[in-house]
Image 1 (cartoon, rainbow, N blue to C red):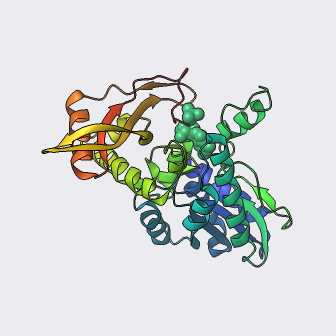
Image 2 (cartoon, rainbow, N blue to C red; image 1 turned 180 degrees about the vertical axis):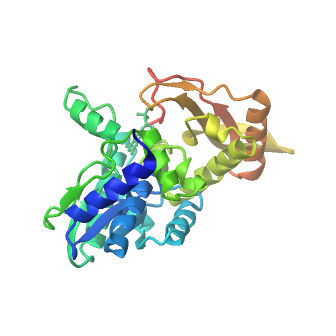
Length: 318
Ligand code: XMP
């Protein structure tokens, strides 16, 4: 019968057999469960010949890059953190269309990743944290004639490097990936993390993206996520986050009239993200989040809660 320990043993053996003794392997790390588990598995098989590349696109959650990089280093992974935020912001200037933003982010990611990958001498393999549902999805994506939203973190790799692809998790479902991660000692903060889209806050800031807006949204999002954790609600929702809306509304602070931005909170329950229901979070909890955001995040004077299910709404607003 399937156990995570058996899976680890046989996957490590298979990797050691497949990957030549001098081959170097490159892997893009995102802070998500899949790429992190793939990294630990490969690290167990080939040690420092696994070269992780973790790109800060400037669209991650507050403090996420530093925290996750430190966690990776603590696990002994050979990982390079690349601060590429300015490059992403430059590519996004003036873009408001969601698909145009996704494409700019995807293109910039490939440029940055490609540049870093070329620095790894003897690179022969590109590892990916692809899991079974991704395999299914990329087959069925060829079906419909219309792309609803393009996912940027699939494919698009250094062509001229002639890398072979290795995907050690491609037969696993998400819950199995988590079990394998736990068996490999992945810390809970990464293991139980909500899904987070590749384009990050770039598709949660409606309209054009500026570093100031990213900062504003990071602070609001951080209040929401921390309170979910404090109230033991984080693991009860499948995904949660805040969206920065491109409108201002009138409020009052003391004797002053304010005219500031609106944040929408989104939290959903789901099994696989394909369908989702809005999470019926307690009113008292929502009140606390709203008060704290409005009191602490200057520039936001109104908080709303998204009560739309998927379909017909999507989880992300863009
Ligand atoms: P939607 O908004 O389509 O999202 O209901 C479903 C799930 O997919 C995530 N998502 C993305 N993930 N690149 C990603 O890696 C993307 O471009 C992207 N768009 C949406 C979303 O966060 C949710 O978990």
